[in-house]
Amino acid sequence: MSEMILDLSEDAKEFGRQALRAFESAGGDQLVQDAEAKPEARESLVGPVLAGLGAWELDPRSDADGLEAAAALCRSAGYWALPYPVAERLAAPSDLDVDGLVVIAGARPAGVLAGLESSWAAVTLGGARSTVTGLGAAGPAFVAELELSSVDDAGANDVALGLALPCWTLLGMMDRAIELTIAHISLRKQFGQTLSSFQGVQFQLTDAEVERSGLDILAKYALWSIGSGKPEALNDALALRMSAIEAAEVIFRVCHQLHGAVGFCDETALSWLSRYSQPLRRLPLGLSATRDELTRRVGGDGLSGLFA
Image (cartoon, rainbow, N blue to C red; front, side, top):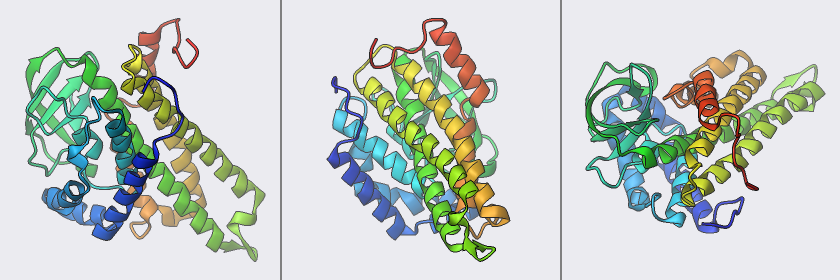
């Protein structure tokens, strides 16, 4: 994975398309609604579909093809707001007997683990690892505070992947939000014209698409950086996270504006996407804290980029 190619392999993209179809066949948008009503059913709702796809046979840590397929799977999971921490499962460290990994920060670590019986590890940005020994009360979007038991400080190589894969999930949510919005403005009429024919609407949608397409390229670059074992991979993952949060703010704002009030109603898929994007945008760090962490790490040197 040394040569930089700004696209996923055809095999990875086909795997992502198969996952999209499998999630749709399993229930599509209804999955997250059913899981919200009964969080303890998350595993039974989604687990068999993921196992059938061979999701847990992927090796994103040591196999370049597996890393790309994992990213494509996370993006497809985001498209349907799949009520399951796919990215966190795929980021599981190979040297601990756990099912998945969450990156944590701050005094009250939390993750989207409510209702799951799996065994989990947590890692700080500094590489300190713990096992999750208990969960607090379930909050919105399956977020629960984590009770932890310290393991070691050997998790430095776990952090970049643990940060990057959830950004691919968030990217999938943005794909769907824009797709839904295009469909909405193509049907909705004002003053005898479809909303899509108004220049102001076209400008807003262009802003959203510029954010999404830019993030798409940055996500692929960060994936290459991680897969190539670059020493600055964590910085690249933090840069990706910062950009993903910024893009999400623009895209969901535009999509909600163009949907109008109906975009906040449970009858629309956009409402569910927007709600379940919040943990991805806020955990382990929000925009300002992510920016501060990245600035602290790169200092005055800046990011390496392609031409260092």
